[in-house]
Image (cartoon, rainbow, N blue to C red; front, top):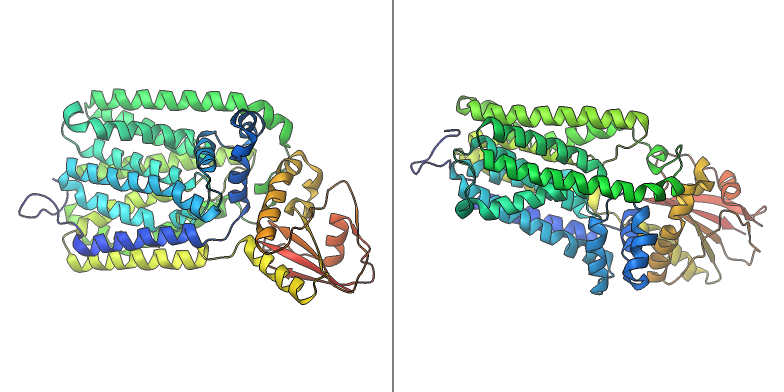
Length: 498
């Protein structure tokens, strides 16, 4: 049996230290949901779940234009109907059920295979403390749902490799139900995630067949077929809207700073080194490695390579790779790390250090990634200027206005989302800036107070020249004004002083 065994036949778990660390990491996730500043992704979900429009109109006019299948939009619409309008509260109420299901499912797997308990506990701790997970929990999108569902898929793959008996309804009924639902959700929640979920699901089915677990293989294959059919239907439904609202040459990904290889390397690197203690376990406990461990490592490694090759090929045709739609990579990497870390599960000192590093790394990720003001940063600066000079006029424009795609279909598609974001955040700080229309020049008459132009979604590395910025947005009447640009965490403010 894999792992160093205790007197009762199961590897010693992480104990109280591990439970305390897991609780601390979960608290950090909650903090990420509540404290992270709003972003365009948050406003997209609010836009796609505006229940005041009525469900039929919402589905026909907005869901159909989304670049994701409608599953998460349906859930967000239910929250909207329940009166949840605050982005931080919506994030928490949205992601908390997925977190609880993940924790409960890990417990089911541990009870079913007590000798693998150490792996499941370490995997859960590593996965939840990874930078990609901290980021996903702080966004009002389906990102954390995707990671949670995919994590259950990886736990199931471990189960299939190590279990000695096929599925039995009296013992595995609830586990099977959750596993099938997780497989379907993982594939139907995000088109990028569908690639990773589909590859892992197929590999798990083949592993079940190879081990003679026919009932597991049949059930998982049924889930895979349901998921793929749903994705094909969703694509066929949304395709006409995509053709009308997207440009073949322009999208947000192409406007960003990061390259596809940079995103993939950064995701793998940050995940591997957010807890090096787990990696060290592969060497320190190498004498405990057996054929089942090797089979799981081969399955996970092979599916990771296959998914990377596939998504890179798609990205070569049209930019697709983002931190969000490739975050499943972090789950696969942490599964390999947990397999290594489980080999030193009996070494209490090492396990305590592993748990402490998990808490530390998740805290660092929260500060570095999650604790930023988002759009609030610019709004606070603008509000201070208005208090100093009440006649200050504020205008807003979308980040598309600084790019060649300013008049593209994609830019027009996102214009109402930017308007919603500026209205909500500006209103929370006492002002409501009009959004400059891309086809209509805006003429300003000096009145002794500054004129401010607020633009969000501006890549940090882009060099901005005030004069070119004025021309890009077609803001007139500022020929004699003193122009300056103030960069914020997610955008900029152009200030024109008389």
